[in-house]
Image 1 (spheres, one colour):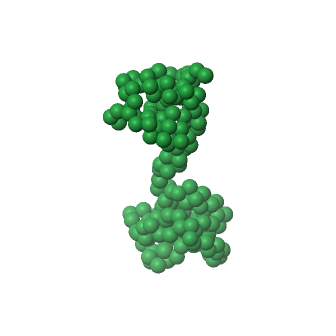
Image 2 (tube, helix red, strand yellow; image 1 turned 60 degrees about the vertical axis):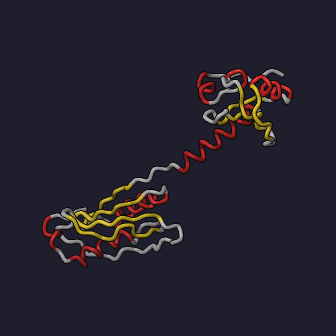
Image 3 (cartoon, helix red, strand yellow; image 1 turned 90 degrees about the vertical axis):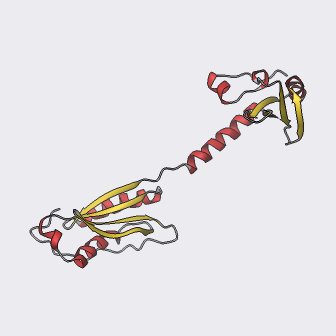
Length: 200
């Protein structure tokens, strides 16, 4: 049985195997994790051929390099599986921002709350801004806080407060992050009689 051949240049660069291994001697691990010790490359290749498998360099920077006798197809499958696991763990967390106003309609709040829930499920933080303009900037903090909490109450996902409510030049803001241990407390926002100055 002949050795497996590379099917692309990318494969060749990814891992040396068989005649592509350049070191004159290598440390050899068998297909069942046996330690064959350090062998001249020709002996290592002969042992792999005897077993009908490939000799694959798995630790090229070791002295001497470490090679494993295994099936190349199985090796590629295991590498893809490891790469997928690494990629899933390397998820980048972002801070997403959603904005509501004093006069945001109940329907719009539900839509924005649904989007915030999606972001939380994806592992992102969500910053909720209550945008204030004109005279609303000078209203009592408790009133503004209650308006912001009306929106938080309809987010259909469990969360915890990462950064508490703060007041800035443009309004109030709060930052949330997902908390799987908490079940969402869905509450229907209280009916508020809109004023002529409310903006929808």
